[in-house]
Length: 78
Image 1 (cartoon, rainbow, N blue to C red):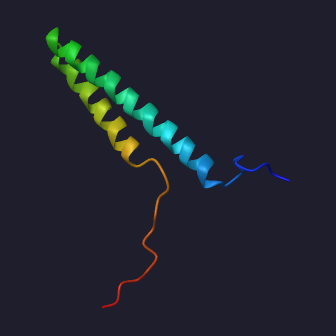
Image 2 (cartoon, one colour; image 1 turned 180 degrees about the vertical axis):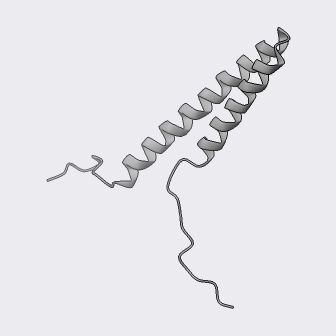
């Protein structure tokens, strides 16, 4: 028997916690890339700055898509 409040396989609370952790980690990575981009720009290395900006944007994009994905299963009426 499962204790009350303990996550089980497929438990939404466990999935949400994992999703929240992934989202937070990706947002943290994006912030690190943004700081690196600013520093590279200050030093005049525009190529490195651009690379860091692209990596930050990728992290932000991935953070936005973390979590349950919903498919449109209802066919619209014509």
